[in-house]
Image (cartoon, rainbow, N blue to C red; front, side, top):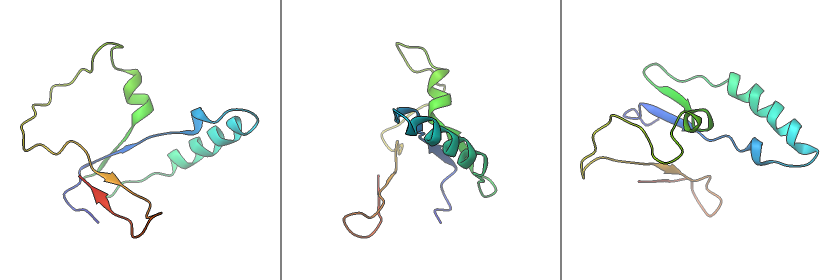
Length: 87
């Protein structure tokens, strides 16, 4: 486990599913979201809910960034080999 990770952002994709499977995908997503638990000291954020709180023309935040700030970690599923994290 990445002990230095403090925040996890979940991206819901079920609202992109169309047709007859759309409502089923959203139902499964709601059920799965309720079961998400984070270890102590970790915070989970729902990207879809968070982005709805933003202005349409710019992001609002108070955080200060430097050139040493890590902006993102991307975890792959390992479809082309072992799972890995890219910074």
